[in-house]
Amino acid sequence: MPSPLHSVAYMLEPQFQGTDFGTEVRKDFRDGVRRMVATSDEYKAVLSQHTKFTNKEGIYGDKDIISLTG
Image (cartoon, rainbow, N blue to C red):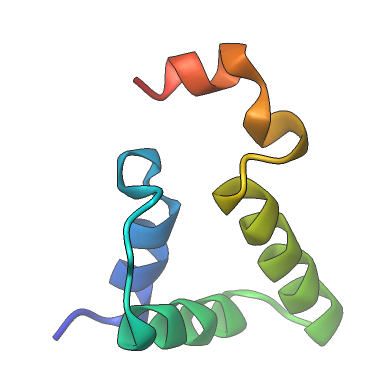
């Protein structure tokens, strides 16, 4: 069973974007993020940025940046 830290790394790996991570990995991701940040505001900001990353919004949708992830 992977740790929350493994789930964070897995969900942030560009090559796995679009993957159905499953409920357990998403829960471990949130648990891992919660352990790494100091405040609830930081936690909310990370989850917000992750949503943008997943949906390729803002800078995460920039074609030049996407091309760097291979």
